[in-house]
Length: 318
Image (cartoon, helix red, strand yellow):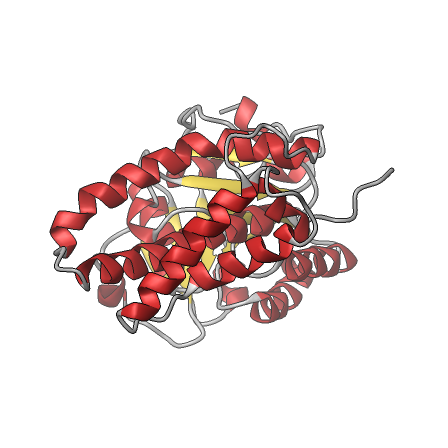
Protein backbone atom coordinates (compact mmCIF):
# COMPACT_ATOMS: atom_id res chain seq x y z
CA UNK A 1 0.00 0.00 0.00
CA UNK A 2 3.07 2.28 -0.03
CA UNK A 3 2.16 3.63 -3.44
CA UNK A 4 -1.43 4.22 -2.34
CA UNK A 5 -0.24 6.45 0.50
CA UNK A 6 1.88 8.67 -1.71
CA UNK A 7 -0.06 11.78 -2.72
CA UNK A 8 -0.30 12.63 -6.38
CA UNK A 9 1.93 15.49 -7.48
CA UNK A 10 -0.37 16.39 -10.36
CA UNK A 11 -3.45 18.58 -10.28
CA UNK A 12 -5.69 15.65 -11.17
CA UNK A 13 -6.54 12.70 -8.92
CA UNK A 14 -4.71 9.49 -9.61
CA UNK A 15 -6.37 6.11 -9.62
CA UNK A 16 -4.84 3.37 -7.50
CA UNK A 17 -6.08 -0.14 -8.08
CA UNK A 18 -3.82 -2.15 -5.81
CA UNK A 19 -5.40 -3.48 -2.61
CA UNK A 20 -3.90 -2.39 0.67
CA UNK A 21 -0.87 -4.32 1.91
CA UNK A 22 -1.64 -5.58 5.44
CA UNK A 23 0.13 -3.86 8.32
CA UNK A 24 0.39 -5.05 11.90
CA UNK A 25 -2.95 -4.66 13.68
CA UNK A 26 -3.50 -3.66 17.27
CA UNK A 27 -3.85 0.12 17.28
CA UNK A 28 -6.55 1.94 19.20
CA UNK A 29 -8.77 4.00 16.93
CA UNK A 30 -11.59 6.33 17.90
CA UNK A 31 -14.65 6.49 15.65
CA UNK A 32 -16.81 9.51 16.37
CA UNK A 33 -20.28 9.26 14.86
CA UNK A 34 -22.31 6.07 14.60
CA UNK A 35 -24.60 6.54 11.67
CA UNK A 36 -24.62 3.78 9.07
CA UNK A 37 -21.17 4.66 7.71
CA UNK A 38 -19.53 5.29 11.08
CA UNK A 39 -20.84 1.97 12.34
CA UNK A 40 -19.54 0.16 9.26
CA UNK A 41 -16.11 1.71 9.75
CA UNK A 42 -16.04 0.74 13.44
CA UNK A 43 -16.96 -2.86 12.59
CA UNK A 44 -14.26 -3.05 9.91
CA UNK A 45 -11.63 -1.72 12.30
CA UNK A 46 -12.62 -4.21 15.00
CA UNK A 47 -12.62 -7.06 12.48
CA UNK A 48 -9.08 -6.06 11.47
CA UNK A 49 -7.89 -6.53 15.05
CA UNK A 50 -7.90 -2.95 16.34
CA UNK A 51 -9.28 -1.70 19.62
CA UNK A 52 -12.11 0.68 18.71
CA UNK A 53 -13.55 3.37 20.95
CA UNK A 54 -16.81 4.80 19.63
CA UNK A 55 -18.87 7.85 20.47
CA UNK A 56 -22.20 9.08 19.18
CA UNK A 57 -24.09 12.24 20.04
CA UNK A 58 -27.12 10.05 20.85
CA UNK A 59 -25.93 7.13 22.94
CA UNK A 60 -26.28 3.71 21.30
CA UNK A 61 -25.69 0.37 23.03
CA UNK A 62 -23.20 -2.01 21.47
CA UNK A 63 -25.83 -4.56 20.52
CA UNK A 64 -27.43 -1.96 18.25
CA UNK A 65 -24.12 -1.74 16.39
CA UNK A 66 -24.04 -5.44 15.66
CA UNK A 67 -21.01 -6.14 17.86
CA UNK A 68 -20.71 -8.27 20.96
CA UNK A 69 -20.21 -6.71 24.37
CA UNK A 70 -16.96 -8.60 24.82
CA UNK A 71 -15.63 -7.43 21.45
CA UNK A 72 -12.83 -4.95 20.78
CA UNK A 73 -15.36 -2.09 20.67
CA UNK A 74 -16.05 0.13 23.67
CA UNK A 75 -18.28 3.18 24.07
CA UNK A 76 -17.09 6.57 25.31
CA UNK A 77 -19.41 9.21 26.72
CA UNK A 78 -17.72 12.15 24.97
CA UNK A 79 -15.36 12.83 22.06
CA UNK A 80 -12.58 13.71 24.51
CA UNK A 81 -13.08 10.47 26.41
CA UNK A 82 -12.83 8.55 23.14
CA UNK A 83 -9.55 10.31 22.41
CA UNK A 84 -7.87 9.22 25.66
CA UNK A 85 -6.10 6.10 24.38
CA UNK A 86 -6.58 6.56 20.64
CA UNK A 87 -3.73 6.54 18.14
CA UNK A 88 -5.97 7.79 15.33
CA UNK A 89 -9.35 9.53 15.20
CA UNK A 90 -12.05 9.01 12.55
CA UNK A 91 -14.88 11.54 12.43
CA UNK A 92 -18.05 10.50 10.60
CA UNK A 93 -20.90 12.76 11.68
CA UNK A 94 -23.90 14.22 9.86
CA UNK A 95 -22.18 17.20 8.19
CA UNK A 96 -19.17 19.50 8.34
CA UNK A 97 -20.79 21.91 10.76
CA UNK A 98 -20.99 19.06 13.26
CA UNK A 99 -17.52 17.74 12.42
CA UNK A 100 -15.91 21.16 12.95
CA UNK A 101 -17.50 21.26 16.40
CA UNK A 102 -15.99 17.87 17.20
CA UNK A 103 -12.55 18.89 15.93
CA UNK A 104 -12.66 22.07 17.98
CA UNK A 105 -13.35 20.00 21.12
CA UNK A 106 -10.51 17.60 20.39
CA UNK A 107 -7.82 20.00 19.15
CA UNK A 108 -6.34 20.99 22.54
CA UNK A 109 -5.78 17.32 23.44
CA UNK A 110 -4.74 15.88 20.09
CA UNK A 111 -0.97 16.26 20.47
CA UNK A 112 0.47 14.55 17.35
CA UNK A 113 -2.56 12.41 16.51
CA UNK A 114 -4.27 12.64 13.12
CA UNK A 115 -7.96 13.21 12.53
CA UNK A 116 -9.54 11.65 9.42
CA UNK A 117 -12.82 13.36 8.59
CA UNK A 118 -15.06 11.25 6.34
CA UNK A 119 -18.23 13.27 7.00
CA UNK A 120 -20.18 14.09 3.86
CA UNK A 121 -20.04 17.67 2.63
CA UNK A 122 -19.44 19.91 -0.33
CA UNK A 123 -15.93 20.71 -1.58
CA UNK A 124 -16.16 24.19 -0.09
CA UNK A 125 -17.21 22.76 3.28
CA UNK A 126 -14.31 20.30 3.23
CA UNK A 127 -11.82 23.08 2.49
CA UNK A 128 -13.27 25.22 5.30
CA UNK A 129 -13.04 22.31 7.74
CA UNK A 130 -9.42 21.63 6.79
CA UNK A 131 -8.58 25.31 7.18
CA UNK A 132 -10.18 25.38 10.63
CA UNK A 133 -8.26 22.28 11.65
CA UNK A 134 -5.04 23.97 10.52
CA UNK A 135 -5.89 27.06 12.57
CA UNK A 136 -6.29 24.80 15.59
CA UNK A 137 -2.96 23.10 14.92
CA UNK A 138 -4.59 19.73 14.24
CA UNK A 139 -3.15 17.13 11.88
CA UNK A 140 -6.00 16.47 9.48
CA UNK A 141 -6.97 14.29 6.52
CA UNK A 142 -10.14 14.51 4.43
CA UNK A 143 -11.60 11.20 3.33
CA UNK A 144 -14.52 10.17 1.15
CA UNK A 145 -15.87 6.62 1.27
CA UNK A 146 -17.09 5.97 -2.26
CA UNK A 147 -19.15 2.80 -1.67
CA UNK A 148 -22.30 1.79 0.21
CA UNK A 149 -21.82 0.60 3.78
CA UNK A 150 -22.04 -3.17 3.00
CA UNK A 151 -18.84 -2.84 0.95
CA UNK A 152 -16.82 -1.22 3.76
CA UNK A 153 -14.16 -3.68 4.92
CA UNK A 154 -14.34 -5.72 1.70
CA UNK A 155 -12.32 -5.90 -1.50
CA UNK A 156 -14.95 -3.69 -3.13
CA UNK A 157 -14.30 -0.75 -0.78
CA UNK A 158 -12.90 2.42 -2.33
CA UNK A 159 -11.82 5.50 -0.38
CA UNK A 160 -10.20 8.78 -1.46
CA UNK A 161 -7.90 10.69 0.90
CA UNK A 162 -6.41 14.19 0.81
CA UNK A 163 -3.92 15.82 3.15
CA UNK A 164 -0.24 16.42 3.66
CA UNK A 165 2.05 13.49 2.93
CA UNK A 166 3.03 13.21 6.59
CA UNK A 167 -0.57 13.21 7.81
CA UNK A 168 -1.81 10.74 5.20
CA UNK A 169 1.12 8.52 6.08
CA UNK A 170 -0.39 8.01 9.54
CA UNK A 171 -3.70 6.53 8.36
CA UNK A 172 -2.43 3.16 7.16
CA UNK A 173 -4.31 1.20 9.83
CA UNK A 174 -7.59 2.71 8.63
CA UNK A 175 -6.73 2.16 4.97
CA UNK A 176 -5.97 -1.50 5.56
CA UNK A 177 -9.05 -2.14 7.71
CA UNK A 178 -11.45 -0.60 5.22
CA UNK A 179 -10.03 -2.88 2.54
CA UNK A 180 -10.25 -2.65 -1.22
CA UNK A 181 -8.40 0.20 -2.86
CA UNK A 182 -7.71 3.82 -2.09
CA UNK A 183 -6.55 6.96 -3.85
CA UNK A 184 -4.45 9.72 -2.33
CA UNK A 185 -5.03 12.87 -4.33
CA UNK A 186 -2.59 15.35 -2.82
CA UNK A 187 -3.32 18.07 -0.31
CA UNK A 188 -6.39 19.66 -1.94
CA UNK A 189 -9.17 18.85 0.52
CA UNK A 190 -11.84 19.74 -2.07
CA UNK A 191 -11.01 16.74 -4.27
CA UNK A 192 -12.42 13.81 -2.24
CA UNK A 193 -15.92 15.32 -1.84
CA UNK A 194 -15.85 16.66 -5.40
CA UNK A 195 -15.21 13.20 -6.83
CA UNK A 196 -17.66 11.60 -4.39
CA UNK A 197 -20.50 13.96 -5.32
CA UNK A 198 -19.67 13.79 -9.02
CA UNK A 199 -19.94 10.01 -8.92
CA UNK A 200 -23.23 10.26 -7.05
CA UNK A 201 -24.41 12.73 -9.70
CA UNK A 202 -24.04 9.97 -12.29
CA UNK A 203 -25.47 7.33 -9.98
CA UNK A 204 -28.67 9.12 -9.04
CA UNK A 205 -29.27 10.44 -12.54
CA UNK A 206 -28.80 6.92 -13.87
CA UNK A 207 -31.21 5.39 -11.36
CA UNK A 208 -33.80 8.07 -12.06
CA UNK A 209 -33.45 7.59 -15.82
CA UNK A 210 -33.78 3.81 -15.39
CA UNK A 211 -36.98 4.17 -13.36
CA UNK A 212 -38.41 6.58 -15.95
CA UNK A 213 -37.44 4.25 -18.80
CA UNK A 214 -38.96 1.26 -17.01
CA UNK A 215 -42.22 3.17 -16.61
CA UNK A 216 -42.18 4.25 -20.26
CA UNK A 217 -41.64 0.69 -21.47
CA UNK A 218 -44.19 -0.58 -18.94
CA UNK A 219 -46.84 1.77 -20.31
CA UNK A 220 -46.65 -0.30 -23.49
CA UNK A 221 -46.86 -3.70 -21.84
CA UNK A 222 -43.17 -4.39 -21.28
CA UNK A 223 -42.78 -5.81 -17.77
CA UNK A 224 -39.86 -4.50 -15.66
CA UNK A 225 -38.08 -7.86 -15.63
CA UNK A 226 -38.36 -8.12 -19.39
CA UNK A 227 -36.99 -4.60 -19.84
CA UNK A 228 -34.06 -5.07 -17.44
CA UNK A 229 -31.68 -6.81 -19.94
CA UNK A 230 -32.24 -4.02 -22.43
CA UNK A 231 -31.45 -1.44 -19.77
CA UNK A 232 -28.29 -3.29 -18.77
CA UNK A 233 -27.24 -3.37 -22.40
CA UNK A 234 -27.57 0.38 -22.86
CA UNK A 235 -25.67 1.00 -19.61
CA UNK A 236 -22.83 -1.08 -21.05
CA UNK A 237 -22.98 1.01 -24.23
CA UNK A 238 -22.82 4.17 -22.13
CA UNK A 239 -19.68 2.91 -20.42
CA UNK A 240 -18.03 2.50 -23.79
CA UNK A 241 -19.01 6.07 -24.72
CA UNK A 242 -17.42 7.76 -21.71
CA UNK A 243 -13.84 7.87 -23.08
CA UNK A 244 -15.06 9.73 -26.19
CA UNK A 245 -17.04 12.17 -24.06
CA UNK A 246 -13.96 12.73 -21.93
CA UNK A 247 -11.88 13.50 -25.02
CA UNK A 248 -14.50 16.00 -26.22
CA UNK A 249 -14.45 17.83 -22.88
CA UNK A 250 -10.65 17.81 -22.65
CA UNK A 251 -10.17 19.18 -26.17
CA UNK A 252 -13.35 21.32 -26.34
CA UNK A 253 -13.86 19.96 -29.87
CA UNK A 254 -17.09 18.47 -31.16
CA UNK A 255 -16.54 17.47 -34.76
CA UNK A 256 -16.21 13.68 -34.99
CA UNK A 257 -19.61 13.30 -36.64
CA UNK A 258 -20.37 10.20 -34.56
CA UNK A 259 -23.47 11.59 -32.82
CA UNK A 260 -24.94 14.60 -34.61
CA UNK A 261 -26.66 17.22 -32.49
CA UNK A 262 -29.72 17.40 -34.78
CA UNK A 263 -30.15 13.61 -34.75
CA UNK A 264 -29.85 13.36 -30.96
CA UNK A 265 -32.27 16.25 -30.49
CA UNK A 266 -34.79 14.42 -32.66
CA UNK A 267 -34.48 11.31 -30.48
CA UNK A 268 -34.98 13.38 -27.34
CA UNK A 269 -38.06 15.04 -28.82
CA UNK A 270 -39.51 11.56 -29.36
CA UNK A 271 -38.73 10.47 -25.78
CA UNK A 272 -40.47 13.55 -24.40
CA UNK A 273 -43.45 13.15 -26.72
CA UNK A 274 -43.78 9.43 -25.96
CA UNK A 275 -43.73 10.16 -22.22
CA UNK A 276 -46.46 12.73 -22.50
CA UNK A 277 -48.58 10.42 -24.65
CA UNK A 278 -48.87 8.03 -21.70
CA UNK A 279 -49.02 10.82 -19.10
CA UNK A 280 -45.56 10.21 -17.67
CA UNK A 281 -43.49 13.20 -16.60
CA UNK A 282 -40.62 13.43 -19.13
CA UNK A 283 -38.25 14.03 -16.23
CA UNK A 284 -34.57 14.18 -17.12
CA UNK A 285 -35.33 13.65 -20.80
CA UNK A 286 -36.96 17.08 -20.93
CA UNK A 287 -33.92 18.69 -19.30
CA UNK A 288 -31.57 17.02 -21.76
CA UNK A 289 -33.85 17.92 -24.68
CA UNK A 290 -33.86 21.56 -23.60
CA UNK A 291 -30.06 21.60 -23.28
CA UNK A 292 -29.76 20.07 -26.74
CA UNK A 293 -32.19 22.62 -28.20
CA UNK A 294 -30.14 25.47 -26.70
CA UNK A 295 -26.99 24.06 -28.24
CA UNK A 296 -28.76 23.79 -31.60
CA UNK A 297 -29.40 27.54 -31.60
CA UNK A 298 -25.65 28.15 -31.38
CA UNK A 299 -24.10 25.31 -33.38
CA UNK A 300 -24.78 23.56 -36.71
CA UNK A 301 -26.80 20.35 -36.56
CA UNK A 302 -23.73 18.40 -37.70
CA UNK A 303 -21.90 19.27 -34.47
CA UNK A 304 -21.39 16.39 -32.05
CA UNK A 305 -24.11 16.22 -29.38
CA UNK A 306 -21.30 16.37 -26.81
CA UNK A 307 -21.30 20.15 -27.32
CA UNK A 308 -24.01 20.36 -24.62
CA UNK A 309 -21.04 20.17 -22.24
CA UNK A 310 -20.36 23.83 -23.03
CA UNK A 311 -23.30 24.76 -20.78
CA UNK A 312 -21.27 23.49 -17.82
CA UNK A 313 -17.69 24.42 -18.74
CA UNK A 314 -15.96 27.75 -18.14
CA UNK A 315 -15.62 30.02 -21.19
CA UNK A 316 -13.00 28.76 -23.63
CA UNK A 317 -9.81 30.81 -23.73
CA UNK A 318 -8.73 32.22 -27.09
